Length: 151
Image (cartoon, rainbow, N blue to C red; front, side, top):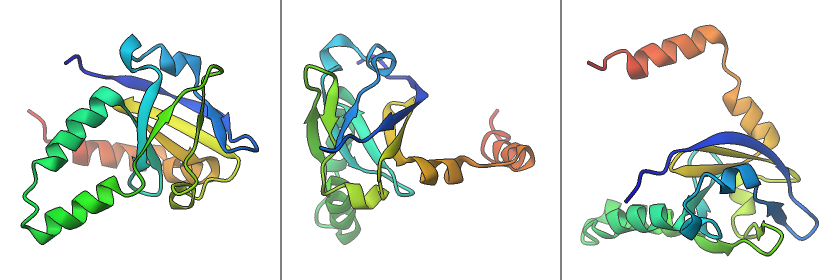
């Protein structure tokens, strides 16, 4: 399987029916067979995560390998799958944000789609801006802590 390496930050708006237009520049980064159907579920730090189907299949396969005889594994598996929903782009490249997931990300009207690695995070715009606000010194310390020990 080819490695998915998404990139970009896209400002979007939630319409009155709870739909978001999937940016064409982001869609072009996906393999053609994975451009129209995704899985969206709860992410970390208060966002939602959109997974292309190939990525979802790989991640869920790994989760499904966990022994369900271990309590922590069962708890994690339930939490990971909680609210996971298939979304399909319509003819205008819109997808419906599942109502069950909106409270997790406190999404109102303005949304940021933040694509990196193999995922697209869906953030409420003010929450995203607050989370990403990091001064240059803090960014430097974080980079040193995370990347400085690589050989």
